[in-house]
Length: 61
Image (cartoon, rainbow, N blue to C red; front, side, top):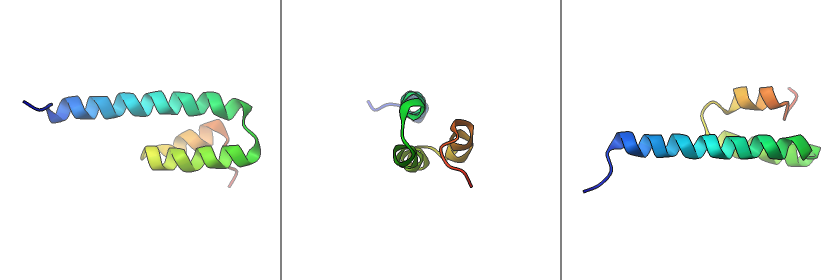
């Protein structure tokens, strides 16, 4: 029997939280070009990426 949709969504949510935490740690030590790359990856990862990007100061607009 397969997983329920609720379990799948919880797994996706936990994975996003883990990756966002990882990107937060990387952003502290990153150069300008690396920060741009992190911002691109965050946009692909989560729909709420713009808020996270502004919190971390990855891109100035």
